[in-house]
Image (cartoon, rainbow, N blue to C red; front, side, top):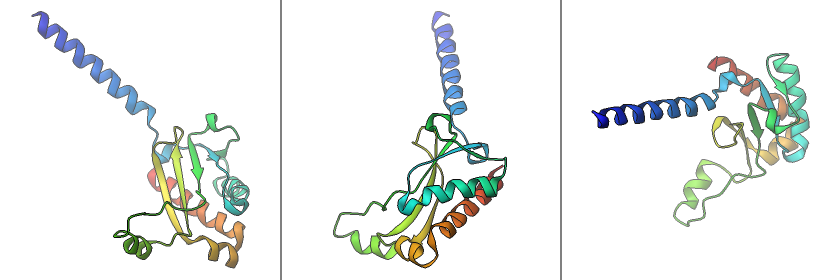
Length: 148
């Protein structure tokens, strides 16, 4: 009898703990405040403007990372595969200069959305940061709207 009560209490605590963990996870459709990390070619400045223009009052840009639901990042370069056997596959799938953009949850540990926009250098040279930002936010907006 004592074992059954202990087992029931343990299962109850486990259920409460898993619910608390699930409650801390946000989905892409729930993002309402975005913090934009520094990006190459001052792209972050244009991205902030585009979020304001394209999302209107549905999603806001915050300047304090702790207030954000999501963190938008565009690392300077993608990580490369270092083994000799994997190098041909890596270069065939994507160039080292590709621009990848990701929206992370506020912890920075879960990717909510990600997109590979192609050759970073050619893109900035041919169309400029403003147009790149428009494309990024257009794709993000579409993804958020489809996940609601």
